Image 1 (tube, helix red, strand yellow):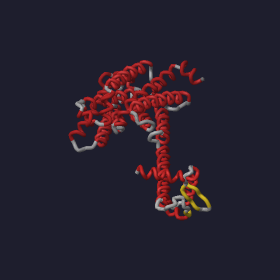
Image 2 (tube, one colour; image 1 turned 60 degrees about the vertical axis):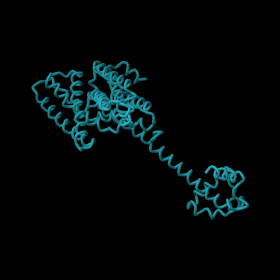
Image 3 (cartoon, rainbow, N blue to C red; image 1 turned 90 degrees about the vertical axis):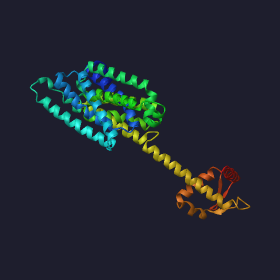
Amino acid sequence: MDILKMFFSDYTIRTVSLGAGLLSLISGVLGSFAVLRKQSLIGDAISHASLPGIALVFLIFRTKDSIFLALGAIAISWIAALLINAIVDNTKIKYDSALGIILSVFFGFGMVLLTLVQKLPDANQAGLDKYLFGQAASLLAKDIINMSILGSISLIILLIFWKEFKLLSFDSEYAKSLGYNIKFLDTLLTTLIIVAIVVGLQTVGVVLMSAMLIAPAAASRQWTEKISIMVILAGILGFISGVSGAILSSTVSKLPTGPTIILIMTFITIFSFLFGSKRGLVWKWLRFKVKKTNYRKEFLIDSMYEIIKDHDNKSHEHSIDILKPILQNNNELKVYLKELQNQNIINIKNYNWSFTQKGIQAMKRKEVKE
């Protein structure tokens, strides 16, 4: 109740929470396509490449208006994305190497420009370095409005090209064979991802922005195979991380907002990697154990039937000792025999086993099917 009261009564907490939630939602939705296209590192490269755009806008126009800085960052990021594609298309350099080259060159250039800006005899340049690590506490109502406008435009375009982006993400060659302009779709989707990255720079900075883009999508991928559910879930997980991280950092002194949001996202992602119902490691291990158990139980009963199927009296008793070499694990053998006895497939008497009539009929039906 205290948190809700604080949320509605405190302008800073309300603004920062809404901004972080909105940013995380947009990043989660658009980041889903980067994850599906196995381009997770593009967020890292583009966010670092945006730094020169911010510094150049300030050097040329001497303004710190967030919308102008965002436009500069979008323009430079877009050039960086085009250069990455040009390097991959026209050279033998692989995609991840091209990302590394562009990230290093543009970030280095951005740091040089930022150093020049810091040395200017102008007090107005103070605070530009917040774009390195983010400063969510500096968010204002007009920043939220700018985020909402850019984010809404991106999400509307995403909905309009939903079918095309799905095809591009799963099978670009098939989309090409259907007559879709792959180059245009690729550029459009990359532009939307750039917008999502630039929108978040003021909150978490260029260093942490890639985590905002990728972590919610990677977490949601562990819970579903359907892309529509994955995208919605990524948005929801991102929103929860953003709002809870912002509120937590506001209630605990000296806790930075951006890193707190990333840590909460990381916790959700690790939990999803472990317990996700579709791809989680724990469920995957349990499914493997169940499959292995079923296979070995099936192998045991098939072997038992092989022993008795040529007998005139198929209910003839045999010693359990002859089954020991089949599984080579006495405890496992005892468990499976007990289960088969409970299912009325076999009888066990005086350390001997025999098939019941129900068991014989079941094995005959199985033999006919095979």
